[in-house]
Image 1: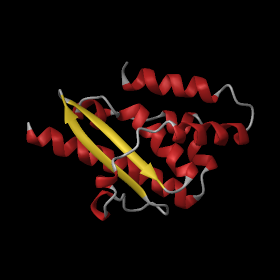
Image 2: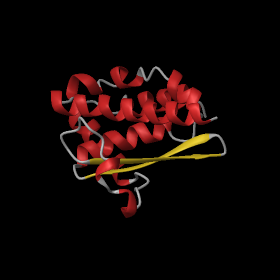
Image 3: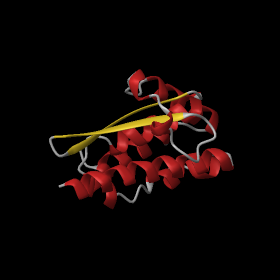
Length: 139
């Protein structure tokens, strides 16, 4: 499934909820299904800078595609990182670098996050794209 197809799937899922309380609950549930990062990667160098909460992210290149795992100590933030892992994991570095990620605005996430959480989301995306760039330059 392409990044755009996954984004559309998420847009469709969020449209099922009438209010933001339901959307937040769904986001929290997504965090519970996040592929958890191994404890050995919960180190200072794996923390995403710019997040108010602690968010660890690990990326690995397997068969030309990047696999992301992550964790957070905050439930909403964990849901946000789960969303980004769902969209960008299992794609090539080029696909990740070229992803527009318009779904974030379409589901209303940016309007309903506090400024610090919004900055954290931007930092997550930036880190994932930086990892993709690093893997791309290795080839």
